[in-house]
Image (tube, one colour):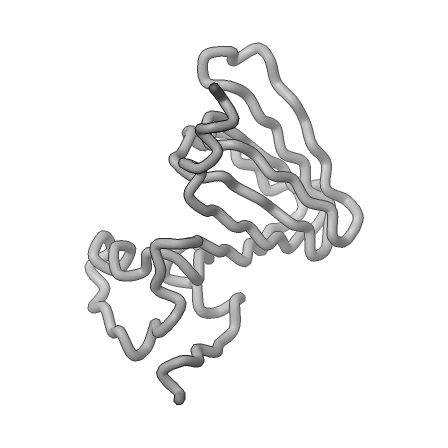
Length: 140
């Protein structure tokens, strides 16, 4: 029965992968030269979803735009004050800011958007990414 259960701590389990603790861990291990241990990573190794427990300090900034991806993203504020800026790759002057400042505030964005962020307070954010290909039907 224990092969059907994986437990751990989100704050510590993602240390090797920029705090992503669930996702394509086998690929992440390969990219970083870390031996992959199926028993150690258990159900955290999946192609279905990626999950990150982000811990940031006040005034931390991502000043380089995160590229568009093949996944839909969602960030949920656990605590703190966090501001995202989004833009379409071919419309760099058309930007939208989204501030998460109440516990439980969230934002979901499609795969064709780039983003940056800044911390207005020490913050913890839970971020999820999943295949956005099913969303492509909505665009037609």
